[in-house]
Length: 579
Image (tube, rainbow, N blue to C red; front, top):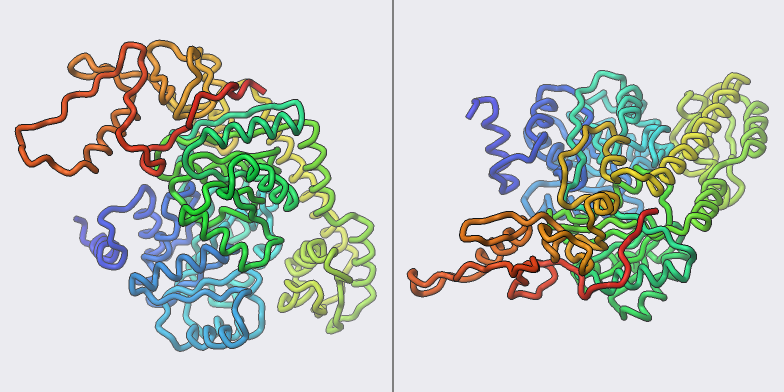
């Protein structure tokens, strides 16, 4: 072992109970310990959190982690404390007393890692506390949110470079699971441009991608219901709106019972937490959710992610579908779309979330009439809160107003200098640019849904990755070209698979010693079963080899437990056809 690597391996073993790093983790940690700022693009389940958790135990100062995911922050703090690593998270759910106690711990306590949402950073008490604390590392999770080219632009992120200066410019680690080359460049530019980049391959060979184009809502209901009835294991269904989550959950409960739950930001926090916990513990098999569900939720055995309707971007689709099959077992990502309905609905949602030019111009005229030091009420009601946040983010970025309270659109902001015509032009140009980018993202999502080529290739090409090796488990387009026609990676439609493919898994059969033919997944199941089976008393007794019948149907394992052997019950009528 190289001497300079010894401390990180010792910390990995003693503090985290691990013997080896996952790909890219060691290189990222070493770069941070050298004092280099890094941009890490690592797919879901690649171990991003260890990249800042481990160096936080070796650096002299503390580590501040900025994340928009409250559930993730709580889970990570609980896990770190369980390992004896002091950590705290400041969230909007804290009471005033809890906030004061945590801020005191931030200043004086032993906590090595502090988590906070970006909205928290400019609150006066928090800013005073962090400015009085020595920081060695600033880790920014979901870093693509800083880019207007990204699919999930969040105005608060635009002030992070300014905030970093205010706390002494510690080493920066920007982390994200999905970023095109353009978004990567944008992230690096926003933070000063001098960042080492680590970009992991995003190909998920255990996920089969499929698109099912349907004629109407009734046909979509029948298709999704049939798919979920046949799928064993946990499933996440994504919808566009809160009302859709409730409506679909009600519909599916009629056919599937109480194993279906809705999830969206409009539910009371205690109910959201309860539903999430029921899904995580396996008490609920299916959750129908908006994009409020899933980020930061570490659930390995999700067998399928079903999008009911077109997502707003290919980035969102890749991130959400990537929550399937984190355990490496075959899983499904399917998009069930009724194009005329989905396109109109998504365009309406885009229009609703954007500030119109007349509203922006009216606010700019208000601002021009004010003097530096004057207070300014920008939002008049809750319906204007999101557009006010976006508008104020552009002004704060140009240092026109003090960012202390701009995150709360109902609180008066304070002008630092005059708002000029040049500032107004800048704001309007940014608004037009942001609006155009969002429409481009949705257009590309539509291209994916109707693309005639391999869906995996389409995804990888969009994110700037190399052509993948041929996968036995790929997509509905590849099934069409090789003569198969599968609905789910674990079961194929009878009569639709060539003789050299396993009917159970839809994968190429391999010739093994003894004349046995078995696909790779059947072999893996046999090995997994052998590991779980206790040794027999007599070493002379061994299990006979399992032969695959000539019709090639792979042997079913003795266990029926879905968690260890996911699959689909039954042989459904109709596989996804080409869009």
